[in-house]
Structures are given as structure tokens and as C-alpha cells.
Image (cartoon, rainbow, N blue to C red; front, top):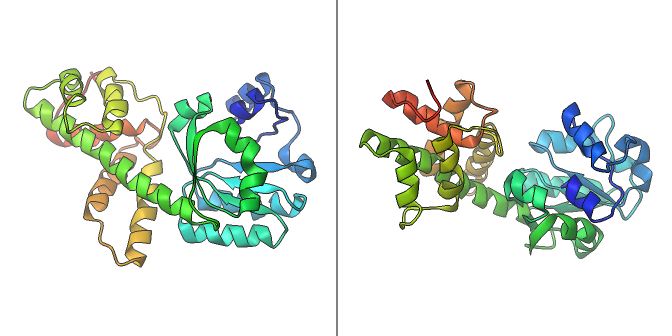
Length: 282
């Protein structure tokens, strides 16, 4: 997303705990200054992190940015978080005269690199207006879901329920096929052209067939994201047994040490239990 903003001609400051990403950011035109040293001049802060705790640390921790921002600046919060948390952050930002856009994203690293994300956004009209340059630079589609934070995160939770279940279902179906003598590539060739396909199947199954678990979206996000789904659904009195089943598989994958592999590696949980050898394994 920072790359997309740089390509659009904006002066972009960035922070990441991984030094290699910062080196890449600077090579591509990112500014050298630390974000907190220039906070007072920023128009937009885009927070693209893992969870609610990290969002709160960035905004209101010991080196939190919000108290340093000028009135009228906007925070664009892209992490998957509970809707109630998004509403709390909105209120805290507003108390400092700062706008808050609840703006979780979908599309993964590939779409992010192309500036073609889908963003599920909610916030005041003023927050949308202040964030528009960044939204235009980073997104192909921006869904405006309401004038108060929380609606964007609620929609992202719905998306994550489906996406997480679909990946786990792909893994289960592929390994079931393997027990019946259907190799992973043949599975992809046929099912991708049948009614049982899904976007996640067509995107993730090739990773398994290639034995390539380079992380475009890591396993470790799913216990957190599906946990948000379960927590939110429970508060609404809704049972989600399919989500619970998928969550158990991702949790097992993390326990197997697969947390930082591509989320298609949840297939390894099924393969291990059935004694199957996946492509690329010796």
C-alpha cells in the first residue's frame, strides 16, 4: 500500500519492524524520516498491522501517533478487528480532532502491490473525504458501508468467515481426493471448472500442487480472524459450527509450526492425519 501511494506521487513515511521491508520501502522512494518525528505534518496515517492490540499501540501507545496529529488528519485502519474495537478507536480519535476510517482490506499482497485492493470502509463523510487520496491510490473498489466505524469491520468478519472456511474446505477436499487416487493438479483442473470451485480454491490450491508455501497470507492470521467471527457471532446469539471446525484446523496448523507459511499449508494438517505425502515433500 505504501508503494501504491509512492507511485501516486505522495510523500510517504513508513515504519515496519522488518528491516528488509524498510530497505525496500526506501529504495522505492519512501522517506527516511521516522513517522513519529513528522506526525504533526501528516494528512493520513494508514495502519496495516495484524490485530487490534497493534492498532491501539500505533495510535495511543507510548509513542502513539494520534495525540501528535493535526486536527483534521485521518487514520485509515486496515487490520481485521472486532467491530466494537473499531467504534472505540473512532471515538478516541475524534476526541483528539482526528478522523477515523474503519477500512479493512481484501486482496492480499498481490492486489496490494497492484493498488487494486477491495476496501470495506465505514466512517464519517469527513473521514472518507480526508482519506480519499489514499483510497484512490490503493484500492480498485471502496465499499462505503456506513457513517460510523464498525460496519467495515463487521463486513470484513463476514468475508473472513467465508474465506477461512473456503481455504479449509479446499484442503479437506484436495486431500480427500488424494485418498481416492486424484492428484492435486488433476483436482485443480477439474474442480476449478465445476460448481464446487471457489475463488480461494482457485487461488490457494495451486500453492499446494506446486509445494510452494511462500506466505502471501499466513496461517497465523486465521485463529485471530475466525476468533473474531466466533466472538462477534456469540454476542449476537448465532452458532457458527462450520467456522469452529475450520478454526480447529488452523489452530492445529499453528501448533505444527506452520503459522508463518502460506495459509494453504492448512492442507498439511489433513495430509498428516491421513498419512499422505503432498507435492514437494520428501
